[in-house]
Amino acid sequence: MRDDLTFVERVHRDLRDVRWPEPQEIRARARRRSRRTAVAATVVLTLAGVSAFVVTGNRGESAPPPVAASAAPTAPARGEIALESLLQPADLAQPARMQLSESGLTEPVLVEHMLGRCRESQGMAAGWPTSHWSRSQTLLRDRPVDRNPRDVLLRQDVYRVAPEAAASFFADLDRLVAPCAEWRSFARYDLEGATGTAEVTHRWAVVQRGFAGDGAALLRYSESEPRDRETGRALGVEPASTSTAVVRVGDLISVLSLAEDGTEPELRRLAELAARRMCVAANPPC
Image: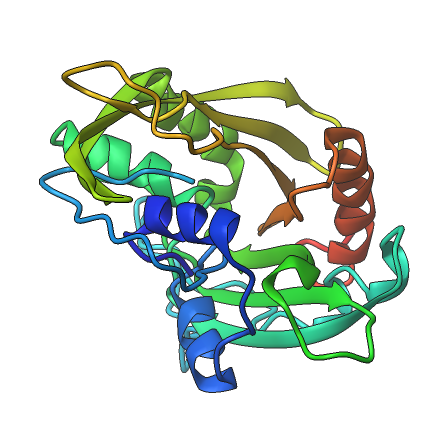
């Protein structure tokens, strides 16, 4: 759910609030695992090169007899992920309602879009494992007025993966993050009549582990204030800082992110609740 123009989206968000896109567009972005909301505004930023500013696979017809220990793993006993295994509006601290829920097949277990971009810019694969099944949802503030991007309270993706991928996921996450502990990106900008090349330093770190389910991690992202690469002049865009919780129960992995005003303690609390709800759909069951 994420387009490449993340920096443009964040600049736009700071300058103007707009209405949500049409439902068809929201669903299309959901399939791409977007983690931030796109907003329209007047600033145009042209990205160049590697530039990005942040801010039920079918089960087998029949099970073959075991012929060797190295035989390819089969799909798990439980398939599509039930809606009741996701967080519910009542779990949130603020009144909420469900905006959309969508299931998918063979989706990458996308923890953080820009982390994949960082790795690709260094000639490495993004590295996300592929799921058998997935389900995503967005919870909005319970308001009787027209929807607004700032109404998003929580985004959650739940993936069913092969048992061996589930068992190694958090060790693999550490390896994915390591090359991107600090990464610089560059982009051409056109801002209020001024043009040039902007520079931002992105940082990722796993800051807490093991607080929920069979395994959990809190991934924190931060960035420096965008500056002109030649002059060092700040471009007046507030740097971003976001946190993502990842929790595993059996063969299920859930990725959660909160609204901009969400806190890490609240994110951890929701991850613990998510782990309990995932029990109803996990292989093996809790």
